[in-house]
Image (cartoon, rainbow, N blue to C red; front, side, top):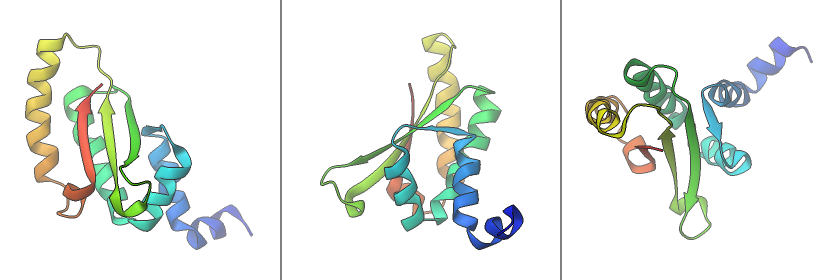
Length: 118
């Protein structure tokens, strides 16, 4: 199977690979499994990243998986922006960013995603 055929056959895998260029997946297997279960979150994570880029430029982002019970049903994803801005300035910028990303993601994503400064 050619690469183009694989991309068409496995669009979720292609979308995950694209996300990995934007986020540092802290627990790759868990995050990948979670996003395969909730693929609509991929678009929301792209929205978060694009919004972050407007406020924090090329600052890297980490993506972490957490689950209180160890099951997918209780799992959430947390993204962390790593910035070199002074703390007070970073908090000011983050406050504006925080309002925008929250308004631009789906209602489902609001159940599963959080963003904070690292």
